Structure formats: structure tokens, C-alpha cells
Image (cartoon, rainbow, N blue to C red; front, side, top):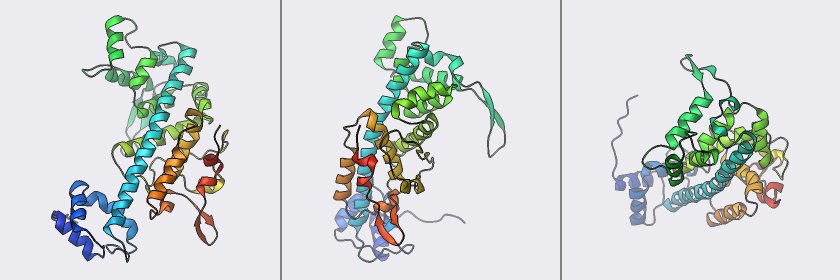
Amino acid sequence: MKFNKPPLTHQEQLNLWKRRGLEVVDETKAIHYLTNISYYRLSAYALPFQSEKDKFDKGISFDDVLNLYLFDRELRLIVFDAIERLEVSIRTRMTYELAHKYGAHWQDNATIYKDPYRNSNKKTKAYFTVDIYSEIQDMIVKSTKGKHTETFIKHYKNTYKQPTNPPSWMCLEVLTLGQLSKLYNGLKNNEDKQLIASEFGVHHTVFKSWLHTLTHIRNICGHHGRLWNREIAIEPQWLQKPQLPWLTKDFEQVTNRSFYAISILKYLLLTVNPEHQLKEHLMELFHKYPKTPIKYMGIPSQGGNSPNLIDWTKQNLWTNSI
């Protein structure tokens, strides 16, 4: 099928929605938001208000669509803040544990990484070699060279000739969360992984999974993607043996939605920053936008014929600190 839809003016976009049943009280305001947010982006937030395709439910207004967009935007800011605090801690603890075990430049020690291995592309079936150590070195070189290198990296390069790379506490400081995740996954010995994972009260296989997912979530937030009702492409593992307050088994049925990812953040923050106001921020957000259908975030119902959601605020994870 050939795409042949013409671009619409902002007024035409609004008129299209009005023909589909959307109530618009203030057209000037609506045109303003369509001009600055875009019809296409807002369309994703219009879908939950359409029980039938291209037909808005009775009584739905432009403000309902806009408020859902604003809810999602503020949710991303809350999540991004939590991930930032967590990322700093992961970087710090990874550096500390491995530096005390292997020395200041442990990141340049090829023996602590998985040996190169062959892998295949699922689509092309072609084989290629995966060399974690070389990939880590490439990441470090790219992050420590260039015109906009951090001042502490420049100081090291200007002061010391050997080793070529700065110590781990400098190198890891310039790696992204995704690169930290790759480095962690590339460690050869599970004992090394567990040294770090234990700091957060989880098994290393769970920590690996969670790091991968949180990197994905961070990228969604960083690129202003829709988060509140998104199906998470990189689904995190369920925590079977929690060492800290956790969720009941009811939540295991929905681990590919935003609320479970936020719960992971809450769990990890119990050791990183127990006083973090993640719960309070969420409650304030839900109160500010009461029409938001939060069930699509992955909060399960009470079961049976009850349409009511489980009260997440009374889960041990969300009522306890350590």
C-alpha cells in the first residue's frame, strides 16, 4: 500500500479530531499546543480515549489528551532523576569493588573479561566475533579523546605517560549507563559481578537484566518517548529472592510495563538513597492528573471480578526503607 496522506495544517489537524468527536473548548490554546508539540506526538495520547478506531469516547476533550501528555512528561522527569542517582552509585560501586580487587587500572586488564567468542546474526545467520575487552577499550578511547574531554582526563594525559588510559575512577566517570551495562555483562567471573550486585541486594543475573532494562528506560526518557503505558521491549527479570522489601507475586504478571521498572528503581534506591522521595513524587503526580488510567502502567487488578487496582502504596517495597 502506498502512503499518500498530505500534510495538514494545524487547523486541519484540529478539525479532523473534532470530526472524530473530540471536544475543544479553547481552539487558540489547542492550536498553540499542536504547533509546539505536534499532532503526531499527541496522537499517541489520544488513543486511550478512543474505544472505537478514529472515534473519541463521549465527553473527551482536548485537555484530556493534553493532560495525559503532560502526565507522561512529568513521569519521565521523575524516572530520569531516579536513574541519574542510581547511575552515579553503580559507577561508584563498580569502580570501588574492582579497583580494590584488581588495581586502579582494572578496566584495562583483559583477563577479567569474557574471552572472545563467535556469535551469529539472527536475521542473516552470519557469524561474527564478539571481543568484549576490545569493545571496552574502544569505548574508553572514544570517551577520553576529543576537544570536549573532561578536565580531569586532560590533566591525566598531560601529566602521566603510562599507563595510556587514566585510572578506572576517571574512565568510568565518562561512560554512559549503557556502556556500564555492557562492561558489567562482559566481566568473566560471576564472583566479580556478584561483588557489585550484592551492594544492591540482588543476584548478579537479576542485576544484569535490570541494568539492561534501565538503560532502555533511560534512553526512552532521554529521547522524550512515551513511557506511562509503554510495553518495555527489554523486559526485566522478576526478583525471586529479594533481600529487601519487595512486591507481592501479583505484580509478577506485568513485568513489561513502566510501573515494574519504577519499582526496580525504588528497590535499588533503598540502598543508594533511602530518603529519595520517589513514592511521594508519584503520588503527587497521580493526584495532579486524576483522570490518568494508571492501570496501563502495569498496576494489576485485585483479581476475580474486581475492577479495582491493587493499592501499590501499601506494598512492602513502597512502605519500607532500610
